[in-house]
Length: 411
Ligand SMILES: NC(=O)c1ccc[n+]([C@@H]2O[C@H](COP(=O)([O-])OP(=O)(O)OC[C@H]3O[C@@H](n4cnc5c(N)ncnc54)[C@H](O)[C@@H]3O)[C@@H](O)[C@H]2O)c1
Image (spheres, rainbow, N blue to C red):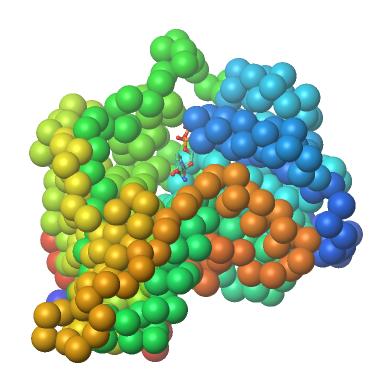
C-alpha cells in the first residue's frame, strides 16, 4: 500500500520567530543597487565550512570587494569567540539575534543541515539576502523545502545555494548545446562521488568534556530534531546521524547532481530507487557510507548517481543522447557524436573553471543588481526534493514517486 509523506507541523516557537522576522522586513527594504555599497555579511555557523567562508570573504575584501563580515553566530561559544577574533565582528549565540543586527545585509548559513531551512526562512522574512550552504534542508524537511522557495520569491530576496561548482560557466554552455540538439535527445546521465575516508567520524571533537550550558546551547542545536540526551559525538560529529544528516545523498550528491539537473533542464523525477548501506564504517554511524540512486524523469531520461566513501576510484560524469555523448573531466567537457550520426567528429571542448571566490562575487553582484544568481532556489528545490526521495527510498526499501499535481512524495 502506498502512503503519502506526513509533513511535521510548524511549532509555535518557529511561527512566532517568523512573525517577528516578518515585522522586521518592512524596516529592511531591498538593497540599493549601487556597486559601491558595502554589503554586511552575518555568518551563521562558524565550524569547518563557516571558517572557510570567513577566509574567502576576508580575501575578497582584501582584493577590494565592498564586503565586510559584520556579525557571526554559533551556538558553541568557543567557536563563536574564534570567529569574533578572526573577523572583529559582533558575536551572537542565536541566529534570531544576529538577524536583528542592522549592520547585517545578507547572511551566510553554514550550520548543520537541519537548521538551514529555518534560518533561511527567518533571514528572508527579516529582509536579508542569503548564501545558504547545501543541502537546502534536512532529508525529512520536504514541506519546508517548498515553503522556502515560496518565501524567497514573495520576499524578493537573492539566495545563492552553496553548490560552488555552479560557478563554472561550462554547465550553462553545455545546457545550451543540449537544448540546441548537440547530442540529440538526452537519454541517460551518470555521475558519482567517491572518496576514501568517512567524513562524519573524522569531524573534530573540539572538547571531549563539552557539556550543554551557557557556552553550548544544546536545545538550540537540536531545533526541530528529536529531543535526545547530549553527546559530544552527536554535537560535533552530527553528520553520522539520521536526525541531523542524510549521508552521501544530501551531503555529497548536490555537487554532482545539481549540474546534471541544470544541463538536462529537468525538475522532479517520476520515480527514484536507491540502494546502499553501512558497508565499511560500522561503529556509531547511522547514515550509509555507500549510496546509489536511479531516477526516471517524465521527459524520458534517466539519471544514475553512485557513491562509496571507502574507495576514491571515480566514474566520469556522462550524458548520453540519441546522437552523441557528453563526457566531463576535471578541466573540460567533450562532445562525441555517435558513429552512425553524420556530424563533425571533433567538437571543441568546453573549458571548466570553478572558483569559490567567483561564486561569492556572483552572489554579491546579484545582491546589488537583483538578478538571479548561478545556483538559485528554483534549481536547488527540485534537486533537494529528489535527494530527499532517494534517502526515503533507501530507508524504506521502496521506490519513491513524485505526485506533481499535489507536489508530494509518495512511498
Ligand atoms: N559546499 C561545500 O563544499 C561544503 C563543504 C563543507 C560543508 N558544507 C555544508 O556546511 C554545513 C556545515 O558543515 P561543517 O562541516 O562546517 O559543520 P561543523 O559542525 O564544522 O559546523 C557547523 C557549526 O554550526 C554550529 N551550529 C549548530 N547549530 C547551530 C545553530 N542553530 N545556529 C548557529 N550555529 C549552529 C555548530 O556549533 C558548528 O560550529 C553543512 O550543512 C555542510 O553540508 C558545504
